[in-house]
Length: 275
Image (cartoon, rainbow, N blue to C red; front, side):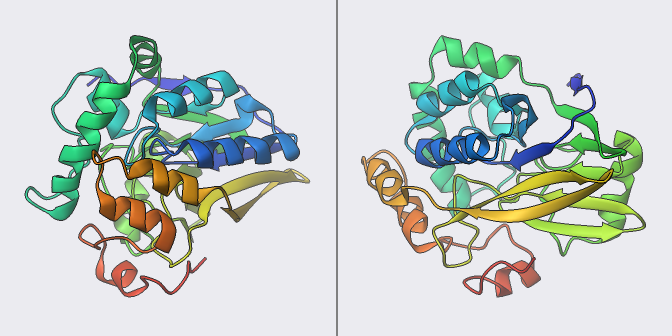
């Protein structure tokens, strides 16, 4: 696959980072309102991919992101959809619960997307690079090398480290794993803002994003939680076509299973996010 990277001009003021909209229109609407309240320009709002996913409004979510003017890279779901692939490309273990659930939500999303939305997905780059507060940032989905690679806070630094050189970055902004975290070492920072489409397995229906600020030419990042109309999101998912387990997760904040999680993150289920 040819790598398409969008190089932005130097960004200033504030930057809003988020991931995994997962077809959750209500969360995206709430985040857009936050950006407007914080006076963050649309072009300074950046998504780590997977605009489409488990929830009930894939078409509406794509169209709102497009209307908003926020930027996004292509997650594995966007890549698979625009190539008319048969599965989501999430790298779930075959026969696992996540894999079985994807055989419900992925065809549902395929059936709902307009040609206009599919054409928009084809415009999304694999990576976004920018300079902010005298640092080089690179936005990836899973990792720079593999769009579907699950990288967590507990993932060894030796796995993360090669990404910085390959991306020519001081800071990697990543998504895919569904959990917000930051891991800093050797003046490099791996920063995952989390996702807004699903709770972070912490027992709370709120979701997560990050705001970057330039403070006297030094950048500061702040993890923030987002409240939205999760009850409506859950209700819309109860349409007989999507996994009921995911609609419950929207309410409870607890994942149906921890198949994709390493032992450390599995042990933190329901205990809140450790940042």
